[in-house]
Structure formats: structure tokens, C-alpha cells
Image (cartoon, rainbow, N blue to C red; front, side, top):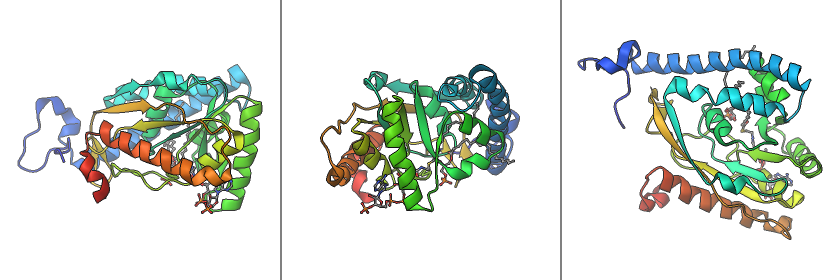
Length: 273
Ligand SMILES: CCCCCCCCCCCCCCCCC(=O)SCCNC(=O)CCNC(=O)[C@H](O)C(C)(C)COP(=O)(O)OP(=O)(O)OC[C@H]1O[C@@H](n2cnc3c(N)ncnc32)[C@H](O)[C@@H]1OP(=O)(O)O
Ligand SMILES: CCCCCCCC/C=C\CCCCCCCC(=O)OC[C@@H](O)COP(=O)(O)O
């Protein structure tokens, strides 16, 4: 692991590190994450006013405003995105987009590639994050209760109907929680049930591992480059609930392979984790 930006005892700060470089990694990490949270809270409050004035209430159209604001955040943190495969989003009609979920910072990567008319599935607790909860609500995010499989399933089957009727794409994090290990957690099946119920394609999106520049365990948070790849759609027309496991496994394998390739992780390491 590269040395964190903070200066350890005995190592003089490099001039380019500035004041933040002289702080311990823990303080540096806390400051940068704290700044991210404040930025999100302040920008959400301002964007909420804009959303209400322009679109009048909760609608997916607000995602355009949120996307425009969040796309500026990367400059504050020295993050660069290298995006490939955006043309794969150009499917006619609705689709399920699935991607890996590493951190709260993912919102920047999400907004970097987010297509129009696309809402995310999020845990209901996000609603209580003050102005961030408000903006997420206004953007049309679908809230689920992860602690109740039956209620989550009910919400998802309602979404299967409305996404087709309203021509909306739905973005799901199939790992179901954040995971910043450089690998994928086993996928939950909700996204794939949803795709098959609605008979819409699944479009996998993979972000390279953050571990070289961001690691909450070691308090690492520096600038860095994130490779993003939008993979070709996987059709679900004609598939039935019996095919959910196969579809889930297929997406998982493709995304894991892509994650390792984008992160420069040797393929023989695949089986050792
Ligand atoms: C302007 C400034 C702004 C600044 C702020 C920026 C804001 C940006 C806005 C964007 C907001 C983005 C929000 C992102 C939020 C990210 C998250 O919150 S991630 C966490 C929440 N998401 C998920 O959890 C999705 C993934 N989870 C699932 O899909 C799950 O399957 C589940 C539906 C939640 C249910 O989970 P669980 O109860 O753990 O059960 P499983 O093990 O998955 O399944 C059990 C069983 O049930 C079957 N099943 C699952 N789903 C269905 C279904 N829809 N229909 C039928 N059956 C289903 C499953 O197959 C299992 O059965 P089996 O026999 O074992 O196969
Ligand atoms: C008045 C209440 C004030 C609350 C203050 C909250 C401050 C937080 C402010 C900004 C944080 C920005 C977060 C942007 C949205 C992030 C969405 C996200 O990444 O959620 C995590 C969720 O996917 C999985 O959760 P877990 O990994 O299971 O856990």
C-alpha cells in the first residue's frame, strides 16, 4: 500500500502536500470525508430549492440537476474518471443497471455516467440524512427496507411495473452494501428478479477498485483515477424466475472479471479471496 498523504514521524512533508500533508492520516481522512459530507449537505439543500423551483416536486427529472452538481465534486478531491462503453446505455426503453458499491464516494462515479431517466434503489435510512435525504427523495430514489425481505420484494415488484410504464432505468447495487476490499460480495437477487419480471435487459457497470487511493480501514484518502466500464446489455426476454440464479451468476462473473482487469489485479488472485 502506498504511504498515505499524511506525514508519518520522521518523514518530512513534500511541498506539494501542503498543510493537509502534515496531518496524520487519520486527521487527513476525517477532514476529507467531513468535507465531502458538508459538501453533500450544502449542495443538496441548494439543489433541493432548484429542483422544487424547476420541476415542482419528486421526479426523475431532478436527477439531471443532481447529476450536474455532483459532477463538480471530483475536482475538490482530485479524482479522475476514465469512462468506456457509454454507448451500451443506449438501449431502447427501460433497463436494470447493476454496479459495484465501494463507498459513499460512489455517488460521484454514479453521477459521472448516469443516463437520463434513471433512478436508484437505496436503503430507507438514507431518507433521514437531512438535506441529502431530501434531495435523494426529490430525485425519485426508490427506498427499500433491507431488514424486511417481503416488503423489499413488494416494492421491487411494483417497480417492475412502473419502470416499464414510465420508461425508467433503475440502478441497483446488487452487493446490497458498501464493500471496499477490491473484490465483490456475493450478489443479492433482487435486481435480477426485477429484470426478469419486467423483461428488461441488465446493464452491468464496473468501477475499478478504490483501494489504491481510498481505504477507510487504513485512513487512506488521496487523489486517484477510477476506471469505469459500462458493459454490453444482457437480455432477459423469455427468461423466467427459474433463470434468476443463472442470470445473477453470469452478471457476477462478468463483473468480477472486469473489476480485476480494471484494477490491474492478476487473474490468478481471483480464487484466493
Ligand atoms: C446535489 C448534491 C447531492 C449529494 C448527494 C448525492 C445523492 C445522490 C443521489 C443518488 C442516491 C443513490 C442512492 C444509492 C443507495 C445505495 C444503497 O442504499 S445500497 C443498499 C440498498 N440496496 C439494495 O440492497 C439492493 C440490493 N438488494 C437486493 O436486491 C435484495 O435482494 C433485496 C430485494 C433488498 C432483498 O434482500 P434480502 O432480504 O437480503 O434477501 P435476498 O437474500 O436477496 O433474497 C431472499 C430470497 O428472496 C428472493 N427474492 C429477492 N428479491 C425478490 C423479488 N424481487 N422477487 C421475488 N423474489 C425475490 C431471493 O431470490 C431469495 O430467494 P432464494 O430462494 O434464496 O433465491
Ligand atoms: C439531520 C440529520 C443529519 C445527518 C447528516 C448525515 C451526513 C451525511 C452527509 C453526506 C453523506 C453523503 C452520502 C451520499 C449518499 C450515499 C449513499 C450511500 O452510499 O449509502 C450507503 C448505502 O448504499 C449502503 O449502506 P451500508 O454500506 O449498508 O451502510
